[in-house]
Picture (cartoon, rainbow, N blue to C red):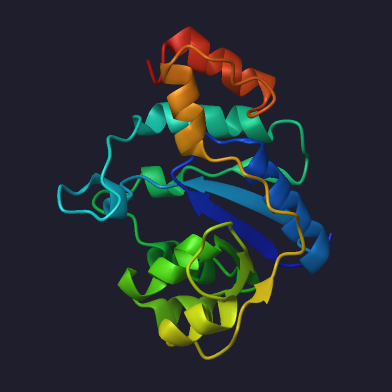
Length: 203
C-alpha cells in the first residue's frame, strides 16, 4: 500500500483512545500506509529534575507493552520500540534520521498543538521539519494558533491540521482515576485497562 509512514511519538503513560483516534484520523486524512506508535525511552522534558513537565514516568517496558496492546486491533498500526533501545534522552530528530538512513524518506510526524508549542525547546526543530511533514492535532487549552506556534518555532511552513473533534481525554486524567481506584474503562482499550490492573500501575 502506497503512502507515507506516519509517526506518533509520546510517553504513552498510558496510551488511550484519544491517541488511537488521532492516529486513525491522520492516517485516513493524509493517506498514510501505516502509523507507528513510538514510546519515548527517556522523555527528558519530563524526567529531568528541572524539566518543565517533571513527573515520574512508568518504566519503559510497561509503556511499550501497553502500547502494543492498544494498537493490536488495527492492522495499519504498530508499536515501535526503537526509542526505548537508545541510551540517553530521546530526541525525535534522531528517530527521523534513523528512518531516513534506512531509506524511509516519506514521513508524516503527528504532533499535538501542545508539542508544537514546545517545539522551540526540542533538538533541531528545523531539521526535524525538513525530515518529516508535520501535521498537528489541535488540543483544548493550547496557547496560540497553529500558524502562530509554527512561526514561533521558526518552521518554514505551517503544519496541516488533523481533521478531528477534540477529545477531552489525557493520560494525566487516566493516571489520576486509576490512582483513586476509579474506572478507566472506555478511556483506554480493555486490554490496556486489564494490564494496568494486573500490574498495579498508577496506584
